[in-house]
Each structure stands twice: as C-alpha cells, then as structure tokens.
Image (cartoon, rainbow, N blue to C red; front, side, top):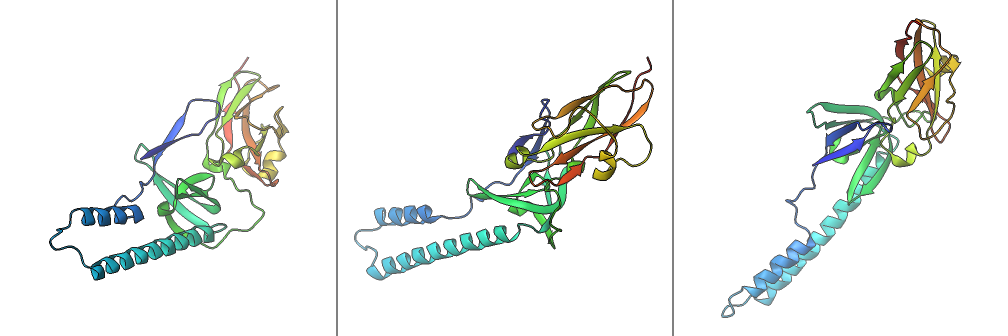
Amino acid sequence: MASVDRVLGSSNNYNAVFTDKTDNAEMDQMDFIKLMVAQLQNQDFTDPMDNSTMITQMAQFSNMQQMQQMTAYSKTNYAASMVGKTVTASRYTVGGDLDTTTGMVQKISLVDDEYVVYVGGKKYSLSQIMSIQSGQDSGKSVINPAAYNLKMGIVKSDSANIKWEVPTEDEMVIAGLKYSVYYTNEDGDFDTVEKVEAGTKSSVINQKNITAADLSNLESGQKYQANVVVTDDSGNKAVYKPVTFTTLRS
C-alpha cells in the first residue's frame, strides 16, 4: 500500500512512498479454530473423529500458540535491539525512485501491530532495513536536515524569502524543533553549525512550528548564501545544505 506523508509544512507538497503489506498467508489462532469447527461440523457421523485425533489436533493448536508467542517475543527483542544502531533503510517512492537513508535508529514504534523504525526522521518497516552497522556517537542531533530541501521563495532587491522542509517524519520530534535562519554575502562553505552561526542573523531565531522566513535589509544585486540551524529538544544542532541566491538590482 502507499502511505502519504506531508513534507513541507507551508505548502501542499506531498511525498508518497510504498510500504509493505501484512503477510496474509500466515495462519493465526482464529483461523485454526475455524478449521477445527468446520471439520467437526462436516465430519461423517457414521465414522466420527476419534478422541486420539482430537487430542492430537489440540496439541498442535497449543504448539502453534507457543510458536506464535516465541515469534512475537523474538520480533520485539530484535526491534528493540536496533535502537541506537546505525542502519541503512530503503523504500520506493510513488515515482519508482529508491529512497535510501543511512543513520541512527532513533526509536521504534508499534503501530497497528507493525513495528515502525525511525531513521533520519523517516519511517521504515523492519523489512525495509537493508543493513545494520555499529552505533553512532551520542550527543549528535537526531535529525539530518541536509537530507531535506531548503529553497528560496520570492527574491527582491532588498529582501528574500526562504523555505524549508520539516527535517523529520516523527511527530514527537517535530513538536520540539526550533529554527534559526542566517545568511552571508561571503564566499566559502556555509554548511556547518559553527560557520552558519557566524553569519548574519535574520529575525527568525529559535522559533518553533515554522517552515519559512523573510530576510530583510539586503543589498541589491548582491550574492548571498542562506541556511537554517535546527535545534532539537536535547539542544543538539544541525543544518541544511545552504542555498545561494542573488538579489535583484534596484
């Protein structure tokens, strides 16, 4: 089935990805009981099922219950063991492109009896985990804005508008994110927290629940770089890939 996630809070842009369906080929306890009842209802009363056959089937039913419980416990332990580890996960978008993310597993959620793995702020199923590596160092941000879009809106001679995607699909993390917008007219890299925060501050500093900002008091005909620092609930910071723009000449 396809799930659709909103990726730009201030517009109507959407990104659809394919997720795996539940395996309908597996038998559960109710299926086994239904088969037993149907067998009893349709047996030949001139030659009914003997007690030993009934006991054998009940034993099979008990064994199946225990196996299902063991499978559930194993799956739970496996999912829990992934938290904090670095994994590579892949899923297909509705356009047929392969969306691959490598990062630390931030948390595991149980949704509709299926485990959801959060990697780089994106949701994956257990079956979409391609590889598992050693864990990452603590103290790093749980988000990776560089994997999301940062772009310019309307650019004028003395101002410009900048927009960005929310850098995670985890609703709980989204609620705690704070954004700070900076710009510079200097050449060179503008893609680390230290370099970005050394630039010029805009009017947007540590604000929540926004995905756009205006840059003002710019010089006409000037080339600029802009970027956004994202701070999570733990105070860890990360930045997007910078965007370059030139103001109009007045």
